[in-house]
Length: 141
Image (cartoon, rainbow, N blue to C red; front, side):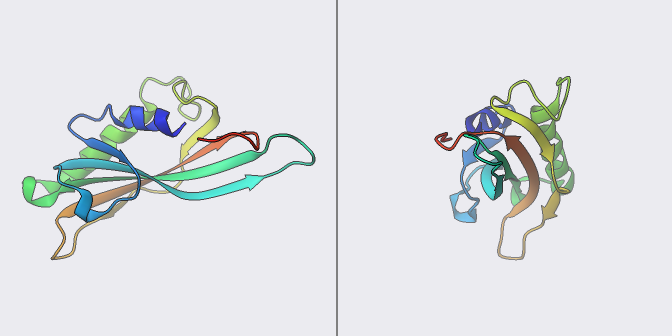
């Protein structure tokens, strides 16, 4: 499931995609995307072998501010490209056909834009997505 999302994010032109937590010191590219875990909640119905899991992930996208003359529009365009890679050409955006093993995908919070402080060089956007699935207790990502 995580690999499916990463593959979709790699469709964003010019952006380097990484799995893991954003750290300013790791980024050398002018456009980048990190996929990181945010929250997880599970409900276990009585005596069944599976359970319902709601996994929330954050897509941290950013640009290197000194590299762009219009950083605001570049960051907004990057978020639009991410949404397009996830939801474009899907009959039911809440159930994309490319996401295996899940029965729900949604943007669960508003996208937040984080502009850098004086010593930082990256403008960031954080898109929060929720995925619902029914793994068994033995399933691993």
